[in-house]
Image (tube, rainbow, N blue to C red):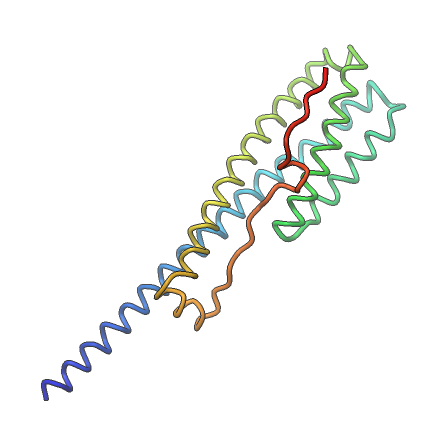
Length: 183
């Protein structure tokens, strides 16, 4: 009888441990999903600011059509990206196009002095900082989640219940290299 009770207690404890591990994995997966949603919110904010910026520049530099079209095309690709890898590449292209647009401001003193352009530029800069923070938060959540599903004994529960590793939001290769400064 004592053996049967001991086996039942051990079985109940193992079930409780499995449920606890499963619930912990669900919470970590939820944290990753929430972090991705926060990135999405900030990217949407960025994407919403860009048409206003393009319209402002258009008023001062309408013949700079190529730079304006590059920003619009890059924004469209960024809005349509789905995976963290695709999103990172699209956002990198958008950042490059925006740099070209801001370089235009140097050639147009009236544009550079425009209050509307300055406010949009500052708001975009603030949004870029928020995006950087949310990307870091997302990658931290992915690290915690991936570690949880790959360590013993949670990896057993994760494997049985379909938890898969998540992808980090990584900068494209050229952004990770050394910065070249030329005078």
